[in-house]
Length: 79
Image (cartoon, rainbow, N blue to C red; front, side, top):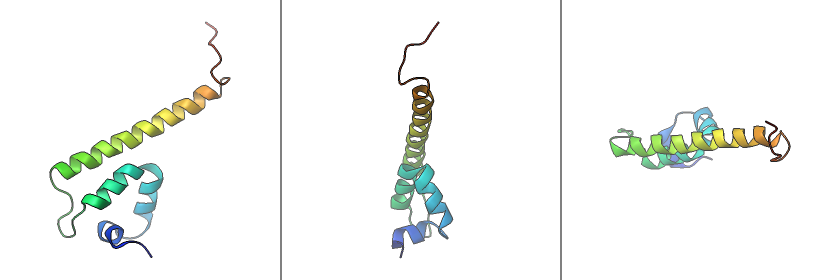
């Protein structure tokens, strides 16, 4: 059984699942700030977008770290 706040913010189960996989912090803030019948207004959107940017930065940094590690665990570059 899903919590009532998640049910109020999303219809169905696929969007919350995808949100938790790819943008967990932004999804959490969206659920917290969501007001049934109103949605998000004003600064609430700012914080959700800011959290989404933090999530995106984390994804990019993780991908960069994985590709850099594949070259030899921090071995010096040959110029």
